[in-house]
Amino acid sequence: MASDRPVATQRLGTTPEGEEVVVVEVSVISGERRVCVILLDLSDSSALTAQDVRRLRKVLQVVPRDWAAIIRPFGRRDAGPAGLDSTVGDVVDGAADIEGVLLGDDSLRIGRVAGSFLGHAFRQAAIDDIASRYASTLLLVLTDGRLHDVKAIEVPQGVTVVGMGVGPLIDARRWQEVVPNAELLEPSRSDTIAVVRRQAGCSFLGPCRIEVPGIRYRLGAALDAARVRAELAEGVVSWDFSRGAARIEIPVAFARAGGAISVTADDGASAILDIGAEAAVAQRNEEPAATVPIGHVVDMAAADAAALMRHFVDLIGQRAPWQQVDGRLSIMATEDLPTAVVSSCGLPCCHAMVVVVPDVGDVAGEGRVPVVWIPLHRDVDAAVQVADCLAAASFVANEPTRLMFHRLDARWLVSVGGREEVALPPRFGQELSVAVATRDGVRCRTFFSGTIRSVPECS
View 1 (tube, helix red, strand yellow):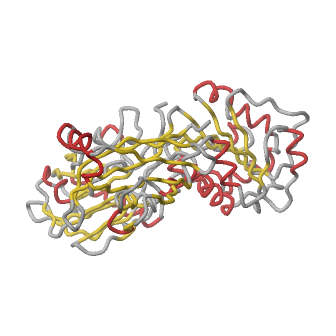
View 2 (cartoon, rainbow, N blue to C red):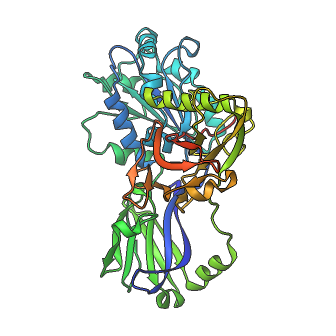
View 3 (spheres, one colour):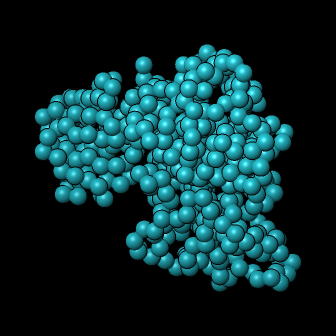
């Protein structure tokens, strides 16, 4: 039974040719609280590499991005890094830095001597406790299958185990002795993604058949319809929801007559979504406008602002993330940050940020200066206009700058001065070439954080 389902939102819109249409965006959501646990065998025999992590990211594209992701290495919890707590979306995007945190020299050194004991890894990762907190658990084990467990392990109820083979020599027979009811998928298998999708119960988060009978319509990616829009003569098209939401533009005349969109997955699971112009009109008239990020001003001592700017420059030069392993931000004391940027427990409240700092130089004096923090969110459809966000501090931007999140590529894009959009680095910060000054004419420097991974819960 599928754990995900397609849903549709509707609003009125106008095509470039001036035709009024009902814009239906079909996306896939997971109906229950679910988690993906990833266990990494770092033993000598497995020889797990960054290439295996890239394969993992590709496989996870068929798992809903909002699932929690808990990543743990084999071995003693108190002897090395505890792992990463994030979301599937952040693992896929690379914001959850598996290579940096778990494949570093220290982690690998500890993993080499820890041994390949899957039962011990279960206990260290507290799989029983995790299974009790979620409706279901998908457990991916990256290993060569050469496990040292003496007997078969007991898999808690609600946990589905899938092995992903790594290393030059994979021992599927030994794996079966330890985990009798789970597959160990060799790297060469062409159906790995299909197997993981099936085991996760994600029928719709992949190739589907979308049907809107009897009309001509446009289909494209949400937020990117202008780039990939296609005019289709038939009312049937294939769409892969792991690439993002589908945007369908339906003539109002057809929508007023009533109708439905059918979505059918490869495994035969299907769903019917009702459409109608009246619902779109009601949504346009009653729903509040989407939240648009605004600038939050922090009044800082000039010397502290100068130190913050140098810290940003250092992080960018070192290609270091703005986020610690535990998810908390590493850029300044959290009590000094706006509540729109960080929660009371020190965890980030946004998916990325832009910070505008006056360049007061190394000799800053004893004055105070405003620093503007702009939180960015992936689920806000509108592009962020930087000039609008600077109004609270009376900063002036000399050319239009906008940022947006491109869901198909899972990247933040920036356009300065109306020029073509440029992709920003997903995991590290970058200084933006934006001409901004304070009302007193002091030049400002603008910094982008890179993607900030979501942390499911405060702890």
